Image (cartoon, rainbow, N blue to C red; front, side, top):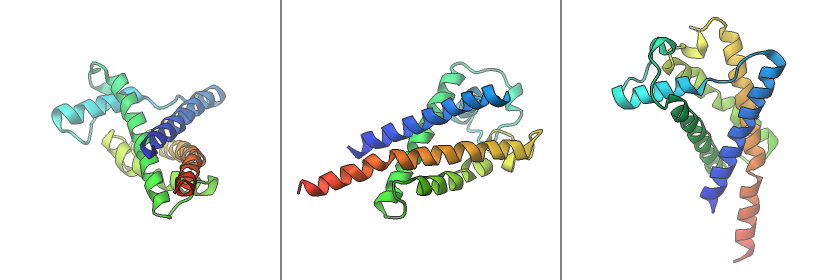
Length: 167
């Protein structure tokens, strides 16, 4: 049952940030994340073993890169939800707004220090035209994502409470 809840929380939290990015685009004209580039990078890792991409945008488009990018995006979200569930079971985090926000803020280290460099953007987006904006957008999205996971994880605590009641 916990696996189904992790899947649901991860998918819903991911959908929330995807919807937020589209709304944010309407308000600011800042485009949402380009999951085709994540797919292109992922396919490059799988076929060539190349973890760090150079000039990813100028590389030839790969077949199914957008679909792969979306799958990776949602897969990572489910992975984050699983980590949050594990931290809850270890009594490190609770299903709550504040704990979710802390988790989201801390999780931004992954794009800043792993995904952006892998995508050829450098640590903390230093190779982009506007690193502070890229980092701020990642922090905003990860904060919302963490809060979504924290609030969505309330179902974990209810399930655990009902499991102990039934014994």
